[in-house]
Length: 218
Image 1 (cartoon, rainbow, N blue to C red):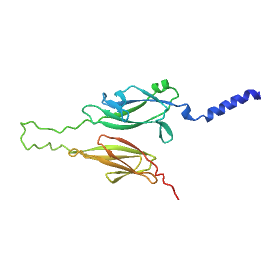
Image 2: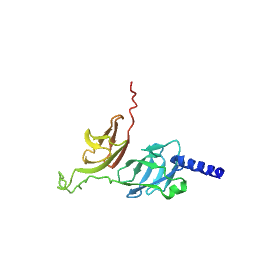
Image 3: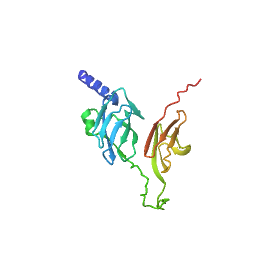
Image 4: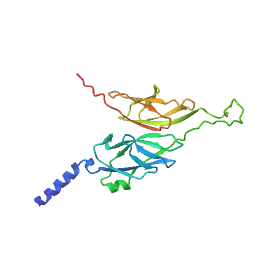
């Protein structure tokens, strides 16, 4: 009986101590937009993913690994284009959550984005009296909300040098239809390098990966 039980015990110990990444090495994702019919391309590699809603794309472990916290997967920077709408640059994280490719394709991660139409200024026809006076209810400003997160969290968020809170947070922004001036996002956290980037009016979600200072103490 002892000879029979030993292989069973060793097998159970091997199963329990096998890391998760050796079993979950597949994932799949697809992109959806509202409205549909936008083209999706991977920035850097120019890989064309198709027209929304895209087909499911399977990925597996290779040298281009990434992490979101303790979760292993892949980061992708996408550009989404549709005529008549603002281009969107989006970063997505696809975690490895399936053991087999066919399972991943049956349960893909779905990323949905809402496209913002390009606002065209009204040009009066020649029959209008000049100087043209816009309608009294026309507002040259508009607002949008942007969700800012970071890894690690609890980082300070500044937009145009104005403190907006700690990550994760949602910030309401006011945009000027006349100037189309962009805004500057700055994220700071003690022990990490300051991260800064330009915000576009069509962006609604930004994730910042903080880089440690790597300073050695003497």
